[in-house]
Each structure stands twice: as C-alpha cells, then as structure tokens.
Image 1 (tube, helix red, strand yellow):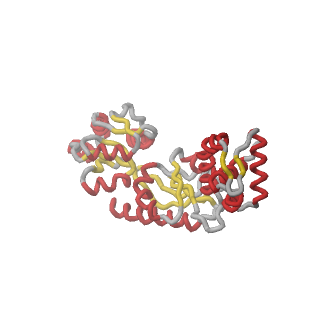
Image 2 (spheres, rainbow, N blue to C red; image 1 turned 45 degrees about the horizontal axis):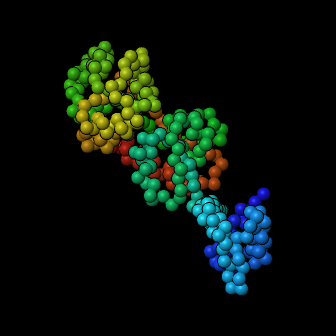
Image 3 (cartoon, rainbow, N blue to C red; image 1 turned 90 degrees about the vertical axis):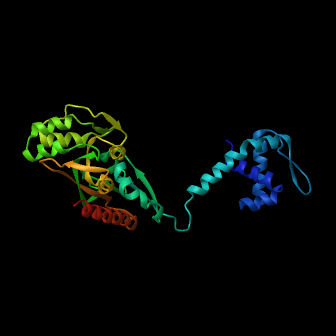
Length: 300
C-alpha cells in the first residue's frame, strides 16, 4: 500500500529541487527522503526525477504526478495544521444549546467579544441536553450528568402589531367575557411558526380549556420573524414576552392580553457536572443573567 508520506516527500523534492532541501523542509533525514522517493518510484513503476550533480529535475511523468497531487496534499497539510493539538494553550471551545430566538435576543451580539470559541446548537431540548457543555432550556429534564440553575421567568402573552385595533378586546377582558374574547381572537390575523405551536396550544387550553380550532394565517420560520412581521402592520401571536421587548419599548408591538391564567416558564442553565470549561460557562451565564435582569426590569 502506498504511504501518503511518500507523496509529501515527492512534493517537497519537486518544490525545493534537491534532496537536502526536501529534508530540511520536512524535518527528516536525507536518507529518509531518498528512501521515500525510491519507494514511490517503485510503486508507480517509473522515474520521477532525473538526478544531476546540482538538482533533481522532474521527468514528464513527475510533472503530471505533481500537478495531480499538489492540491490534495496542500489540503491535507492545512487540515493537519488546523486540527493538530498545539503545545501552546489553544482557545477552548464550548457547545451551547438553546432556541434560535433566545440566541438572537441575547448571545448573538456578544459573540465577537468572547475570548473562546463557541458552537451554537439549535434543536429539540431533550436531544440538545444529551450533548451539551452548557444550555438554555425551559425544561429541566432528567439528566444526571447535568446541573440545572434557574435564572429567569418568561411569560407567554398575546402580542399584536401596533396598527391592530384592540379596543373591543380590552372591553371584553374587563367584562370577563370569555366567549367574546375567544371569538375576537379567532377573527384576527394570526402568525405562527413552522416547528413550534406549543405556546399557542398551551395559552388557549389554559384560558379556554380547549385546543385552538383554527390555523394561523401566516406560518413563518421562527418567533423573530413573527415579531418583525407584526412590527410592520396588523396581526397577533402568542410568544414569550421578553423576545419582543425592543419592539414593545419602541411602540411597534404591544402586549394585548396575558390571559386570566398567566403562563410562566422558568428558564434554566443546564451545565455538565464535570467540565473543564467552568470559567467559560460562567462567562456565558453572566451575559444571560445580566441581560435577562435588565429585560425583567424593563418589562415590569
């Protein structure tokens, strides 16, 4: 079987023009270079260089082989350099799992300032919890390898675009007219997300004791898309309140009903009990705790 080091040695000889130059470039002995070259020539069945007193001159077959292997060898060397464990202290890399909207709202803006590498994972919470250094989740789960620490409560509310007329809803809420509230809500323009209608289902069941019997008018990729759409016109949606904080503060979106039975989710940090990245995880947690604390004060 061919040894890939033979190709690397051949490439070094071709580029330096001498066995000595190749040996210096590869940090191996000159006899080792000669052995690699003779082994490769025996393997391919023809001469790759004409040997002169001053230089190794490539044959035509040698030129063809060089042109064929140059790019693959360069890629392999780049991969080796990238993944090689350095004797110097490398930047640590931690994995963080959370929903896309929470990432956009809180962590995304801080990524360029972090002194370590981060891999963000999006997906179902149970799956993410199996493969995390650190995670943000509204579900603690039953994972003995993870510690959970609560840090914030999100409230599930009905929000609307600023142009949505809500005077009738306000009167219905004051009078406690559940049937009227339900009918008013069903007649509005609704926004939902592709993968998760859990907020709407929970809110509807909690307040009306039934599942919603309608479909949203517009299905968009995520809650951030919903909020952007509502900011531009009319419509309503059920979302966690903190995700629309900026739009509420600016007046582009408004909270129109929290429900008679308020729904709150406690958000947790899920962290591996045994980790060498405690300092990095603490850094991330401080970002979330600070931002969520400011958000909580603003929402109140």
